[in-house]
Amino acid sequence: VQLQASGGGLVQAGGSLRLSCAASGRTFSSYDMGWFRQAPGKEREFVASITWNGLSTYYVDSVKGRFTISRDNAKNTMYLQMNSLKPEDTAVYYCAAARSAPYRRIKSYEYDYWGQGTLVTVSS
Image (cartoon, rainbow, N blue to C red; front, side, top):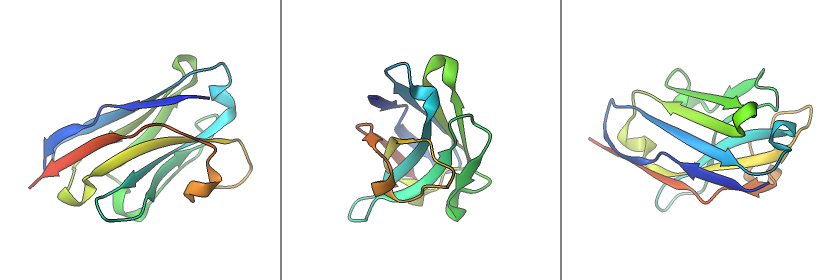
């Protein structure tokens, strides 16, 4: 599967953005999906994940209550709604896909396919 992330941009602290991850191929609905981010000079970190059927989601503590991950399998697209953005959310955001499995994946090496990344900049 090929992934294309979009929706990044410059926003003031407290603002909102919605990232999208469009997938090619007819097997999108069989993949668990995730969002990761990488800030300048830092390692890539897990942000959120969603199971293939959208029934289970998981978030890193720092975004709980502010970010919402969702997917529309009919449109082969995953989303990340980001509200109450903070300067520390500034990073390149990547979407990723992993073949469905009965356990949660939060490590980057557990994902098989990656999008190219979209830059989110939050000004103070």
